[in-house]
Length: 87
Ligand SMILES: [Zn+2]
Image 1 (cartoon, helix red, strand yellow):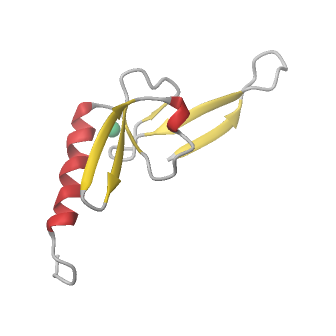
Image 2 (cartoon, helix red, strand yellow; image 1 turned 180 degrees about the vertical axis):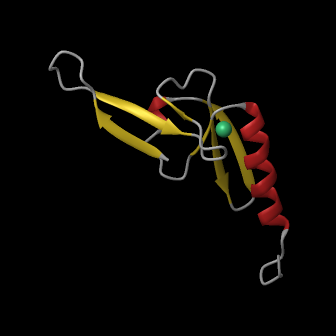
């Protein structure tokens, strides 16, 4: 989840990016150490945080490797569940 709010740094228009982890919901303005997850029909990939990737709407925002593991686990579990199967 990506929220943008105007900054208040001396009248100069700036955008502060407040990002919430898609797994645990932790909110931070500093994404140092965060990771990004990206999924496709048959894969799940992880990349180091890159602000340039924030425009990608399918990207998962992950605050830690713990949340990364959770996201991977959930994603793979969904993919391994046959279509039409009851949860
Ligand atoms: Zn998290």
